Every structure is written in C-alpha cells, then in structure tokens.
Image (cartoon, rainbow, N blue to C red; front, side, top):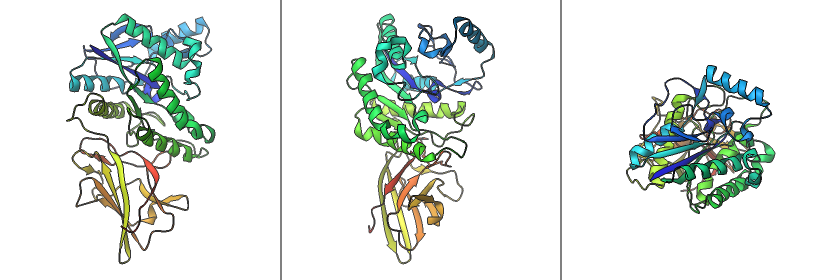
Length: 380
C-alpha cells in the first residue's frame, strides 16, 4: 500500500520559497500533479496554472492562461514548500511509500475553502480537492488517503474572520473526513509563522489565529499542530526554502508519532502548567512544557528566551520581567523573574504580534508554539 497526503491551505502550503538548494526527489515519493497525472514528486509541487480545475486560473482567458503557463515554465523562481521533505521523512521513518496531492492556493480564505461550495466542483477549492483526490485513488488502487497537511490562516487574520475561524475549522475538518469517508482522518496543521507587515494592520488577529490553531488539537481528536514561528522567510510572509525543510521534518515527526505510532519519533512540544511563586521581593514564574525531546534549547549565549513576556492590562511588555532563562533544574521548563508581586490580571504570552523574535526549541528541533495570553496560577 501507498499513503496519500493532501496538501491544502494557502500560499505557505503551496510553497513560495526560493527555488534554490531544493529538496531532491526520491523514487518512492509520487505526486498527483495539477494535470491529473502521477509523477515522481519534485519541487515545485504546485503548478496552479496547469490545473484542470478553473478555480486555480482566476479570470484568465484561454489565451492568457496558455501564455502565463509558458512564462511560468521559463522564469519561475519561487515555489519550494514542505511537502517533499515531509514525504521523504515519513517514508524513511515508516517504511511506507508516500504519495502527495498538491491542492493549496495562495491567498485563499476559509470562506473560499467552504465545503458548502463543493457542488461547484472544479470551480471551488474544496470541490477541486475532492475531485482530484477521488481521481488519484481511482487511478492508483494501491493508494489510500492517510491524512491532510494544512497551512492557512493568514487571509483570516482580521476582526470578522477571526471570530469564526475556530468554528470554520471544526466544520472543515469534519467535512474532509465525511467526504473522503475516513472518520478519523488525521489533520495536521502549521501554526502561522512571522509576517513583516505594514504597521497599519492589527496584529491582534494574527495572534488570535495562532492561539486558535494551537488549541484546536485539544478539541478535535486526530488533529495536530507544529509551529513555524521561529523559521526563516524568503520574503515578508513566506517561509523560505530552508525553513520549509525544517517545517517538513517537524510535520513528519508529528505524523510518525501520532499517525504511524513510531514511538521513537520526536513528539510535538505543548504548553503545560504556568505557575508563580514569591520569595522575598522576587516573583518567579515557571512554565512547564510537555513532550519535550531531550531538553529545551535557546541559541542565546546567556540562556535568555526572547519572545516570552507578561501581558498586563492588555499590553505585552518584556520589561515586566528582568530575567528569562531555562530552568537549570528541569529540561522541560523555563523561568521568568520579576521584582515585586505579579500585577493583578497579569498573563503570560509567547510569540505575540506579526514578527516576534522566537527561537525556543528542543534538541530535536521541535519548536515551542506561540501561545497566550495564558492564565498564571499564583501562590504556588
């Protein structure tokens, strides 16, 4: 048997990294390309203008489409993603040949991915995904649907869309499972990465989408998430080629651990207890993480942890603490120290805003997800 993974979402799943130092193809990794044919998977995986389904063509005329296809083949410089790295790592770790079906489309929102549009067939994203997946299975009887890789949310990071993002994700995952007739279909997500944006946008909603993504696996069995908050980009918003390789390995580790039951695969890092204790004039906040592989690491020579801070009265300010550090007595915990008592209502945050500086990982390069604001249990 071969396992098929669906690549869905928007541009960071489509892949926009520079076409340099690419992940190399492997003979046991195939892709059902946009022309509805099986090929050995090679970067870039997504060629939207060559898709059969018109949802990927925009409003181009047939003549414009033909010209743009030819130009893309001549001059394309962007397009690397996480899919091929993921597939190679999963195949190596599970011993199962992996197939991919690229279905992502840059700039698309949850409204555009609405499963209710599926009756439009190839004129909708969900309908096109279903058509192509069913055709892929029909033309490769030894292949079975194994899971979905999802990277999306940038287009929903606004006041109105963020309010319904959680509900829409519940609906989307349920419909993937229903329409593909796999009730427990794994759905592995990427938490939003950094964005070097213009200042007029409100980063609150970017942070809120990240927090929804972090907590969805607690609500939906078979869902999982890995962070991209610490990864390098090749432009203002798109994870770069090298970042995608790291991200592909993180997704593969998550799949091997939770889908293929490979107990030796690194596990995702999750937030655990957040407590505080006061000793004299110093209050220490301790954060304990679950699933840490080996120990937590930070590249800062002084052991400081950028990106983690207190939020007081809705304002995140690192100056509320005078020290952040790895817990010298525990490989899975960090400490924050401040003078005096905690301000009333203080909460803990990590990775707020568009472009936070976050580099906390473990020794297996499984990153700590952005989180917060989180309640601090005081008086411990």
